[in-house]
Length: 549
Image 1 (cartoon, rainbow, N blue to C red):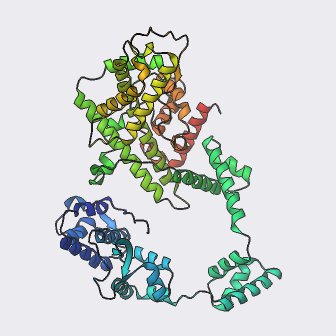
Image 2: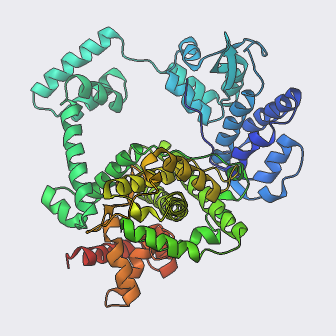
Image 3: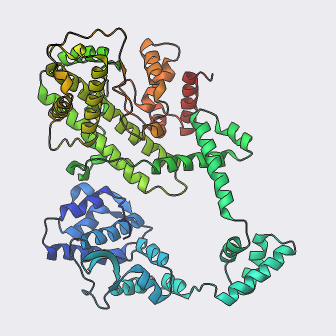
């Protein structure tokens, strides 16, 4: 089954959910209204989104009056038609000529199936239909005929195109091999034969590349190795210009290889999130990340690395918790919702990454994932404070009375329980503190040795090393490679030392010292400079804390 198409306009994406409660007849009426609008849209013009949606829905949407490009509006309307058809349980017989899959129609009219996919972006509507109880994407022949009438030149050009037949292909390969043996390059041989046979230069060149040219696998492997090397060097703070000179390539190519490698790593990230109704509301992209609880992420100060010190600091922090439980619950809900929102937005952007991605888009994805990590870390820290408080109540005399091995096992079990709750916490269904307390109680109940009331207090001669606030996501290292310098950056920022300006810049970039993570483009806007200069400032600041300068 083809992957479901995505929207560009958030308002259009939220429209199918608004229409879920309507009758089947009403949904079909609005689907046909959207289909009727598509042929009249000029991709080069601008349109008022509110007026267009009013023609479909029948009511005014005053909040959606922003002008949008015709090409974007047309593509989203095609996707809207596809989504609305999913609610109608169509069988393909509703229109004259019936419906067929894009592959079947492509064979009927003599074009490639990719041509129909391209036509869908240009206004050819597809629908979900049921065949033997299973849904599939199909195109009505009536819809294809309407597209032919409205796009006669494009339709005729695609149908007139013909592939190489076997005889022609063999002759061209033989003549091409002879021309290359006579001293011509592959490109010039393709150009000469293209003119002789009335074919496109690019088509003949690609044929020669497949049959006569150097295989692509070796070139791709070299590019992959260069990409891995360039990305690793870039993360270590090496100037791409120096790396370009070392590799004997252009600086722009090295930067492109770095971006492509970053995109490959991001495609391996598969974050999970909880879908919340607020994500579909208009303006969610601005309101959810802008909440005060999301913008200010000051850590509670839980000591990490030594279980005994962690328990003591948790008691001190919990004693200072505000008495207003409702305010704390609201803050936890806002942070959990924002965490799931950032993960959702990043995951969808990763799915839409092209082979050669845009650098700003990659930066935005990594920033969203870093923001989700910071929110998750804050929630894990608060959850650990609550869970260690439950351990105080569970273990008579305090967890410190337990032997070293049992105390270490208790700390690890509690930390894992808290992380599991934070990963799947749904703020629309439960309160965070209650979910953490329940998970902690279940983890403690499994450690039956913690109930030895008569045992004397254990004497711990050394500290018990257990990292409670370690990795909060498996993909953390991909988007947060500078995290091991966070403590030194925070210390320099608090001490107002000679590198405090650089420390503040890194804190704003990566989301430390109470700041939310920011993209390079946003930092450049805030500091009124260019993206290139801001990138250089960030690289210099990172190298200063790496000890490279």
